[in-house]
Every structure is written in C-alpha cells, then in structure tokens.
Length: 72
Image 1 (tube, rainbow, N blue to C red):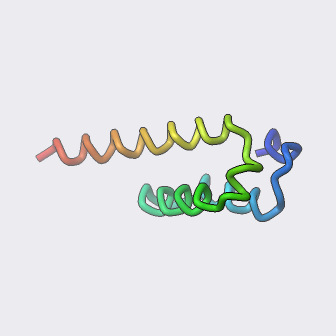
Image 2 (image 1 turned 30 degrees about the horizontal axis):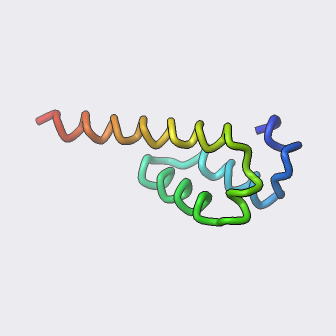
C-alpha cells in the first residue's frame, strides 16, 4: 500500500484498494475489483503495476472456482 501512495492516487482510491485487500471472500473481492476499475478517472490514476496485480488476483480466483467445480 505504501508504494502506491505517492503515485497520484487519492485517499478514496487508497480506501478502495484497502477494501479489495480486506474482502472476506472471493465474490466480494471480485465485486470490489470490478467497481475499482470501472471508474475511468481512478483507472487513469492507478499505476499499471496495480492492474497487473489485480489481474493476477482475478486469475487466482478463477482457478479456485474451476477447482471447486471439478471437485465432486
């Protein structure tokens, strides 16, 4: 979190990022990620590295969901 504070993010942006990290479950985390990136202004302010991290999180959630579906 500290690294992105100097990158032009607002206090609201940082709060939204914190909400993503502290989500209780995958569904909540996905909802918060989608909401975060749907905000065009916020997306423009956010470092690309954060997008890559978030894509990795989404990929991990997808893999967990696929594993759950494959398990009888």
